[in-house]
Length: 283
Image 1 (cartoon, helix red, strand yellow):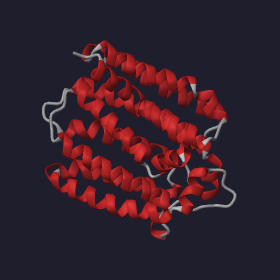
Image 2: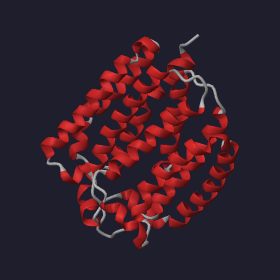
Image 3: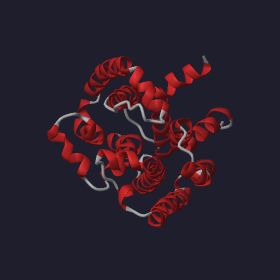
Image 4: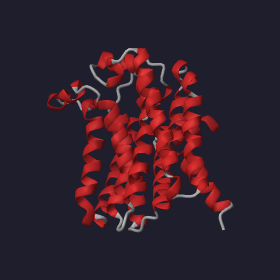
């Protein structure tokens, strides 16, 4: 029963949605942003559930797959489509509440669609699977944009320097995590004709890109020290260190729980630690 509940929480994308919301909280807190936060949280909540369930609904089940998530999706397509449609209605409602910022939000919608578009069974969209480097960058851009840059664009009087540093930090950390995901899926992507930077680079060069991304995340986290408190910077560094330490295991282990629970969780790790500190220790 516990495993069924965990699978439901993770595979219906409630877990990854929680990650997004906690990450947005951290952005709001670190940059001291003031805007319609509740409406934005609810927009992201419904949009994430809608887009992820749409993406996994389009992912075909294969008898040869070793992924429990893919098999679970094959057994529960009706649930994913139901969640997609219901969440889509919620996203549309809160998009209307944020209509003053429709242009900025439309960018997030467009990037999200580009990531899932190659899976849509229509020949007019198949060309997207041929775009080199696209898959990894689309996903990294949309996560960075939605959880970091978009709140800053919507808010008034956003501080420029910490926004740039924090956006670069988020992008670099998420990109490193996405590299691990894409490396795991490399054979599946090659068979499907989906091209990315990961499918082109040899292992040695891929490691350089990966560790270079983590190094950028480290440097930009340290660069934020003049603009935020010591605890905030430490939590950012912990997330970078945790990702670096799990690299060897992730390079060898294809477990769904490792990727969809642990690595996805590392995206919100610093935010979760920071939230815990603020709730329990901050006066």
